[in-house]
Length: 102
Image 1 (tube, one colour):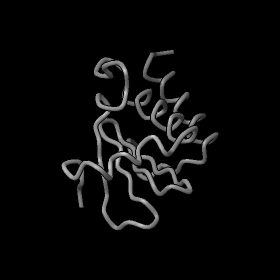
Image 2 (cartoon, one colour):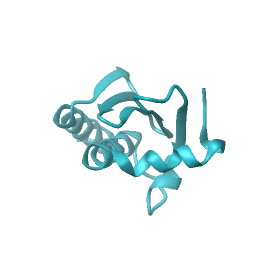
Image 3 (cartoon, one colour):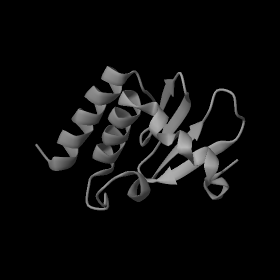
Image 4 (cartoon, one colour):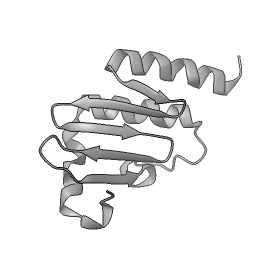
C-alpha cells in the first residue's frame, strides 16, 4: 500500500469518527458547538455560530511542527482530531483581525 493510500484511508476513518463531512476531495466540514470549521490541506477556516465573520489560519501556525512533508490527508486528519477534541483552541482568532477572511 502506497503512503498516500494509507493516509487517505486514515482520513476516511477519522472523518467518520468525528462526524466531519467531505464536500470536495480535499475539503472537510466539521460542525461543533463553537461553530463550523472548513478544513483543507493548507488552512482551517472557522465561523462562529454567533459571528458572520470567517477566520482562517494556516497549518504552520497551529502545529508545533512544520507540516510541509506530510500528505495532505494526514494534515486534514490531524486538524479534525484536534478540533473535535478541543474546538475552543481556535477562538483566539477573533482577537487577530488580520486572520479574517470573508
